[in-house]
Length: 375
Image (cartoon, rainbow, N blue to C red):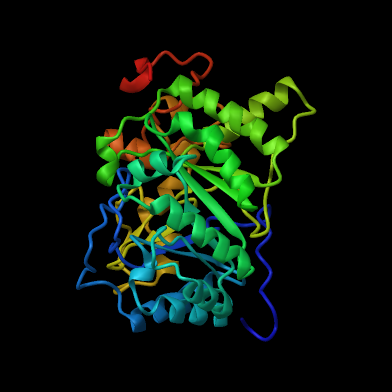
């Protein structure tokens, strides 16, 4: 931790996402001991020989600090703790004025000593994944017996170390009925934020079944109720329709309140390439880990320059460039649809998001193939 105390988080309402991302994620490695059914990274047991080195990682963090004070950085994977320099990189980023967070895998690598070392190095938050409310449900999805127990132990250690805790949950046909039970786990953990990921068919997630647009709509309505009633914040990932659903509810009932932020200064309005950027384990800069189209590589070009100037990123920050149903939607500046899901299902990052149930007024064009799903 720097002697001057933690840098202030940027005001999310004033953040210019043309100039800086609210979140910069760095995939330290794709190595992981788990074989999760939904894994975006298609993680492997061994580390890739061409991963960014410690020195290159330090250079990346120095460059990230050029975005501005308090830039939020998420160290992810794979399992970022599969690298033995993870604690060192947290400390280096913290000293550079970055707000360092991490999403480790729920494995035996999260010992009390290592969690304490991360906290002492300046980690601001730890995010753990829970995809079922029981050991059987969670372990089946994670592909590892004992994962639920290891995650529970890691959550206790984070709390003991004074680390704020975030819980991440994937929503697909296999997990959607577990959401109420997972919600209870989130509260039992004293988590500050529940981040609910709606499946994007990339990596091993291509083999999973998505929920239907209608079911997604009902889940988001339920999440709004959870946000209003719970002591923790709620956000969605790859489901910006959550903001459209909230806006429609507010129109119907002006008294409705929804969670707007939490202790890290979370902004609910970020999408791939617009407030979010992702650096892969080999240095490619993607709009999102779920949208693996590169704007450049940090070994050749500054991550700041790539985020601000790469044509792919610039196009994703222009809601009026969207096509299909999303382009015709009056909520495109509020929502804009998941650019990652559009890319995964159509090959066009500016196309329609097939998970959205909303039909814009007057729209008579084609609807996504998944429109008729009944899951």
